[in-house]
Length: 332
Image (cartoon, rainbow, N blue to C red; front, side, top):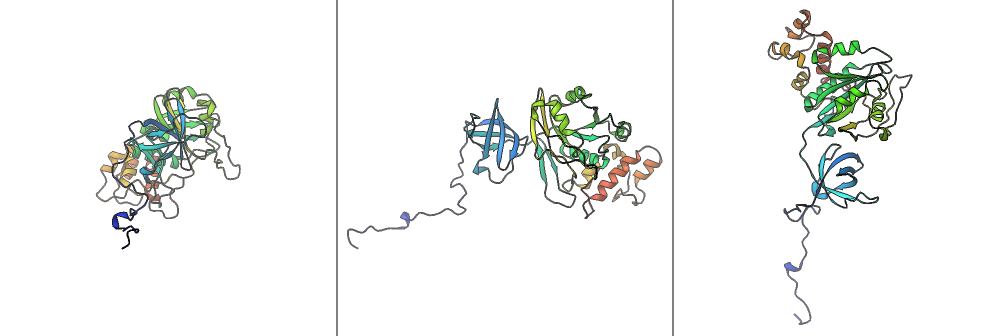
């Protein structure tokens, strides 16, 4: 070998680590200077976060992988936290969630969709007319609330168009917290029920959810929709969940729902969503499906004896049956 030529060995050859996006060491940065923030909105991989008194736009750090971040998450951020326009911080850690509200597209869809994290109350908004109440959707939301460990709050709007008596009678046995509004009348009681909590507002389009949000948080400017006179359905207005600060607490407005799939909730958990029927179900024979044609189902004897509300039993049975419905049981 000539003196002018260098000898190369394997130590001179750069080796590419497998899975090029993986860190080359397990010693990931600790980010001890990270600041705690609250995710108020998510839009195409960008996260709007409240850090102290500033609104920060952030992206997810690569080391977090594919884990999802959703509205309501508490996260740690690094980078430019000034909140100035055209700045971007990074989310480097996500706090353990205290609660997760989920739904599926329908009862046959195995994919869970997280609606919000860390809420402690589910405000189910239903109009009393235009559009009329949808007890099955209310029941589904109640099941989801109980499954997620959230306090349900029934909010009935447009009481100037119809009386709330029938709806309230249907759920009287559950002892639900409820609010009845007529325009802005009843807003004070609603604000009291929301105070000190992180509340998710869910409901069909056209029930007045965005109107309530605008009354509670005037600067929110949520678009208000109306009801299609042909289909009787509301038009979607809100297109994504957003958290809005109250004087004491938070409300998270969500897009209008036309279905609330419960594929992620087991039949036992569906039954647990009807605590007023618990004692009767416990008296059923082993293996009872609790359907209308189930022999010796204690739900039937409870209704016959006047101990159980027929509408509640019917609602439970619809939910249980819808889980076996391959034609879209998730719709209301």
